[in-house]
Length: 385
Image 1 (cartoon, rainbow, N blue to C red):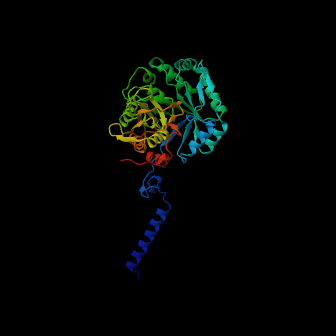
Image 2 (cartoon, helix red, strand yellow):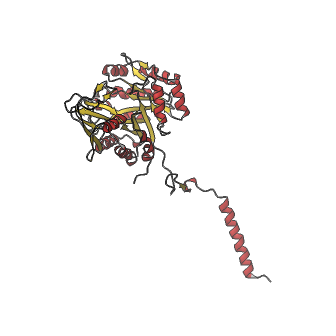
Image 3 (cartoon, one colour):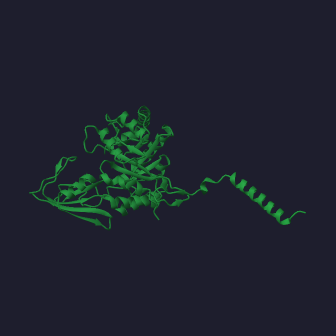
């Protein structure tokens, strides 16, 4: 006679085995997996994508081997860079393309081996006539750009034509649109655009139709610096935090998607002398640090601008420093130097997370202090609340 208790136990065991078999062969959704965070050791359901980092590079130290200088500057970033933008393209008087003699296939190859895109910037060299000639003859110029990109195995073009006004606005947009049509999809197009926190529609700032430019480019590089600049009589910060944040907000108010905005960060400061003989000359952060060490300096972190400010006096008995880039010696007198330090840079990097921006762009690589890359990438990708 069958024992009902034994039969029930057998049935239960069979059902349990069936459940285990079903679970074993049921695929688990990848999104449900909890992956550990490599930095914190804590678990998170989904890792955020790494923020983009590009940088301009420029031979502002007048090295005889500029590409060697560029290469060394890239090495110092410890693999943080995604894209480098050297000054390989300028304009002739008629607006046609001038390829710099410094363009190096070896440098391009070296960057590609490091998985870094090489996207040179094209500049009008602060020449309004050249800029307008380029826009008027854009078909020819774009054909030349496309050929150079192909010939040198470049990854795209960064358009940095600045010295035009609102009268050139539509032509500038047409230029970028035509670039997009003529270049292969795999080639990048970016446009350097002016910081415009007050949304001015005339002058230099008025030349950018940012909404339309964003449609035809991979990203807009927001030049969120030179709040106070060369030949500006009154000293002030290069990029105060309110100025930078308002510039980001202004761009987004023009319906530019945040994922198409790259926040420009300055690796330089500017210096003024009380008698007006030095009026906003730019100096690298390395030089700013050197001057602060060389002279008895009063350094304060301005709470309103979130920028460091150094004041110092050079006497006739001091060893006189020389700004090699400008060929100018700092003669006795009182000076004010506005610049960037780790704290001010970190506060700008935090805006990328706050507004969900694509990443950062730098002017320019090689001007920073050596320890910058100990924090830059990590802070940029930090998860802010």
